[in-house]
Image 1 (cartoon, rainbow, N blue to C red):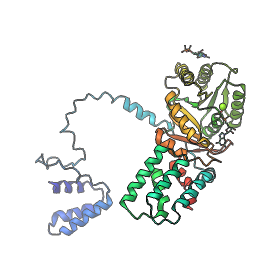
Image 2 (cartoon, protein in one colour):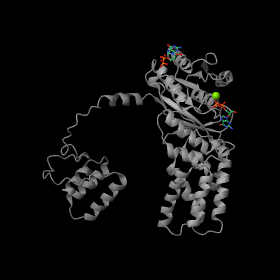
Image 3 (cartoon, helix red, strand yellow):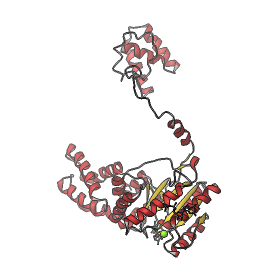
Image 4 (spheres, rainbow, N blue to C red):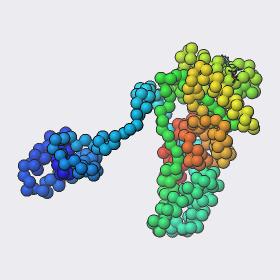
Length: 412
Ligand code: GDP
Ligand code: GDP
Ligand code: MG
């Protein structure tokens, strides 16, 4: 039976040469070696030889009538009583996918390396000390490593996770060379970083609204300027809303950034209702057909309830104009505050539905390890990182590039 199926599947092969081989095999049943070899060939040529994995072709004793060994063996056994209510929304989704705009920016490796230099150097100086004079990764080395990770702002939970996975590996290979610790670490850290590569903007549903939240001073306004310029460079039109109406200086500062990015801005007087500014901004963006709206907010976390109310009011009011707004709630975190940034991320995600993060000020800090803990613990993608005070000091967060730069002292 299997034998037949295999023959059939061979017949499906597109290659004429292989078809000839098959004929030969069928005609001359004496050369079984040829058969095996051609099977091997087939395996090399086609990585998925599906006919084999199906273990249930036996119940039906009539293999000849159906010469198509299709890989779907489930149509008969499952009567599927479910009425499947979701066939309609699916095509819609699929239609929209075609309208996603994928943001692209090649990582400025030099800039990223420079930003993470302090973090990386401080981390590996400690590692070097921990493994000096050691030939294998023993309990002492692992203890030291745990301390190093924690003091590098990776965070306790994530550190424990990393240590446990390294322990497991070391247990398998008792003589893991201490000098290879960084190789193992690199792999484990790479595995742990949450990296969600989703399409960025649904152009079909424009304007795409981004609500920027975060504690005062983390770099929201600066980051909005950077984002505006970046989006513009991607061919998108951008409108900024100055909904941090708490201080006059905040509005002026945002105006300055919108000028640098050469994008438009909607503002009201200081002290006006942030929800009203957001409404005006979205309204204008809809009328003038902008692609992206970015709303700046005042991030006063001192009162969770107030903040929650303010952010949900902004969303609610914008939803009068556009049901889906805001499409994205981007939390900005100051990476130089280390574990504090992690605490903020936790608190903000309790207050509002944070959908993405930007970690700023990774330049000039040794606390960049916090990125590892945040992305592991929160399951919210870090989309961008801030690498300086200038408008172009922004990188799309890429896990591989990040790990490479984090390990720059070791990969050279
Ligand atoms: P906001 O209060 O959250 O709006 O923060 P601001 O945008 O006003 O920024 C606060 C300070 O952080 C400013 O001095 C910025 O220049 C600085 N800043 C923002 N992002 C970065 C960054 O990626 N790197 C560095 N070094 N400084 C930054
Ligand atoms: P509520 O606070 O939940 O009752 O929400 P409202 O619907 O009263 O709106 C709250 C705020 O959003 C208002 O005080 C306005 O500042 C703003 N807002 C709502 N609708 C509009 C509008 O049509 N235009 C403008 N400019 N602002 C609006
Ligand atoms: Mg600000």
